[in-house]
Image (cartoon, one colour):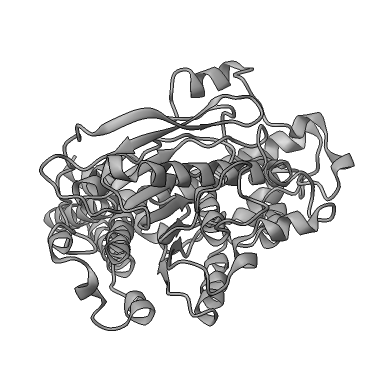
Length: 469
């Protein structure tokens, strides 16, 4: 019995450890699941999707698990190796030691220090963070066991109205997280934009522990619900974000905020929105009608957000080969499911199996970028350029922090590198953090405080925000 347990623990740890070295093969899976290799008959599409799910089950899902649970799986490997030694099972001992070693290596690489802040802000940059705030920051990029989650904060206000949709008149909503009474305000506000490529999810999407942490450091957090594709296009979404910035500044005195200390932050599609809104302050194409307020911001943080939509269209076409080159190629089966049309949809949304999903039930699909921009790249190339943050880079841009996982299967880390180079050339403070062996959405889970990758990212975000105070 002990020998069996040793083998189970050891081989599981070794398998998970080896997964840290594997990058999810998004391109072949995209071709299979979309019929690009096997054909587009219903039977072949079903076979392709089954193969895609198997590939995800044996590569992507284990990598996601490793991103969260690496320390615990390493301990499992060590325990399996120890039990193997006790039972004289050489295979179990070897597998357990390999797993523990690979996972330990993974943790060390993900949480290793870097010189990004030194290069962007100069030596001694930490001394620029106010001493009282610096004392509240978590001192290490990773610690195990993780510090206990912060308790709920009384100042959480839900569904605050920051504007109205210009077409429907529906209220635009946000949640506001305030510092607790015993914490001095830093005067900085973070306007946060959730991810899932502009078409799914909602405010309050797996971020509560992170927002509690920021609020307990003295920051205000404004968590925005923006309209989603295809109900809205990107230009309209950016205008809503500008309204959220203006609302935050207009209520600065009420919340103890300096209106010159507003920072935009977002993940994935929200990271793209944060960058674009930050780089187009008061831009006539994106400024809402009848809004005279200044929409410039103090800084911007993007977690794995695309920066060049022209490149993203080409990359996404390799992921899903059904993405059309012309609108006349669009068929009804490409349209996203909306309004809970199937039993599966209702399980996802009504029962909240995946939290905070609205309008659409699952993100991605062949039309997501086309719907967001009102046409394909060949039809509206100027719209793709206009809505790309890299198009608007200049000396006017605020300091920028980008964080990417180098195994990101959805947004190529080259997006971050290209933007970083452009910002440096424009003499804009820019920090690019690349986390080895880490996938897209590494922080979007309920256990982010246990994840070495999420902890390392939050450590850097804390310090960047401290520099913006």
